[in-house]
Length: 462
Ligand code: ASP
Image 1 (cartoon, rainbow, N blue to C red):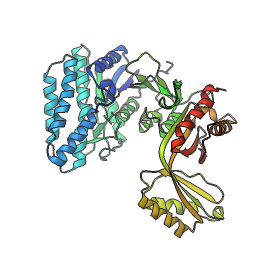
Image 2: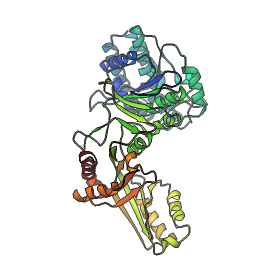
Image 3: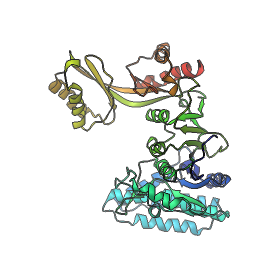
């Protein structure tokens, strides 16, 4: 791997929930950690699913909080949680007292003040990461490795007080740098939560351990941010839709941003922000196959391998089509239209437009039937539109690749692929970034569209 050496030779390695789900997985995590002396800052998620139908520890904790808030008791969830930890502790042949400590801490969290349900839920929800970090540190020590749990409170990871949706506060970076650079041995840091300036525990959105890892990497100016998950790499299309899609070995920050926008769920998009700003490369790797090269996400990449790096699709969109004769001459039409959406608290995604018409693409869930009726009536009444129609059940398909910028005929190839697959294109939008091209299709045609595009750009590789 050709990563330029940075200031301090540190790697931040984050392990996701499946990597901590069982004793066997935790052993693999620890083997990976000690295999590379640069891996000195480790971020862990809460134990995830052991099998497809299993429940994540974080979900058990949320159920536990809900039980306590609504019925004043959460015995079943508490017992399930303790059983999960007992299984792990026994599997790692650690002292049984560890289970007792975790159970006592859980009891304390369950008995916390419930006057703010959000605050109560967050402090309980974060227990999964906190216990996992303490456990991994203790296990590494039992194997003779100098490892230490570090609490986000002591390290100064300060977040906005938006429960379940917190954002990092700028002073955290300096705090973390001071606390973590030069720390002895290996630091094991829990993901997913930090503290508000008032001292209350707050969590990031779900999947937020990725964000913690990225913040730490930026704070210590790491050589590399490694993100260990349960796949060998990011694939160029969903393996559920395309058979054996090609693995992506290298992708630029911009490409990854566009792919995750349109449904590539392997990496938390928000998590890229701190590493992008600091120019730190990210490597997605598999805990079950650590010697596989994984996918590198880098500031820039050469684009010699075809126009597209990936094809993504996301469902759940709708469009509002508005037409009015001589719309192009009417100063302020677009602003007034978007203002109606703002007043209805609707966020929009795209606004492809023609001479006398404009479409607004938005997430379908927020656009309730009631809002739809009001918005349509307002656009007709206040803007004097000739026609307003709403189409639901749309999917957005994105062809993403740095290579598209300098190549002619990409749109041609894409539309020809749609035509061959007999998929009707409802909307085309080429973003000004030119690293992606977007197509709106009916949601039930999305898979066909992805397969057709994959065939065109990856199998008929030109
Ligand atoms: N455990 C948390 C979740 O399930 C955070 C994470 O895993 O990143 O959302």
